[in-house]
Length: 172
Image (tube, rainbow, N blue to C red):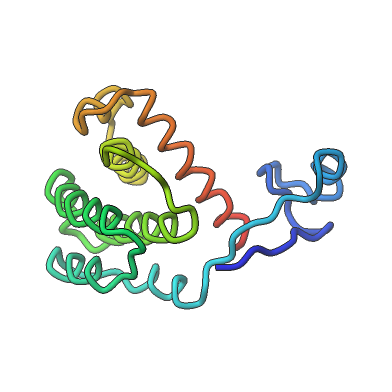
């Protein structure tokens, strides 16, 4: 991924639907310059489209991915099979969402190098991402309890993931 300048005539990064020059450009200039967004590499774009068709394939893909720290890979190896079973990701469409959450986690780890003592905050945030994608009713407190973290920790980790995903969304 690389950082790319937002052009005057591009859609604004705030999500308003307006052109950048008619929306946040002046505010960004006053605050130190235009925001930049993250562009997924071609390899990452193709990976998102080529979802595995089984839990075994998903587990194999986790092992094939580049992980800068063992803790990031270990979180993926523990969480994604658990989510597969918790939410019955046996349908191709559901597995696509789970795999894309894995791609997001991998990209987030590689680009942001998150620091954590316990993996529960990011596990809960990724779980929340998956439940929202599939419209599975789950409260923040329920997910925090499931992963043995405080709701505030879940919220903090979720915000970090959402900000990273917002950068990805602006790239497309």
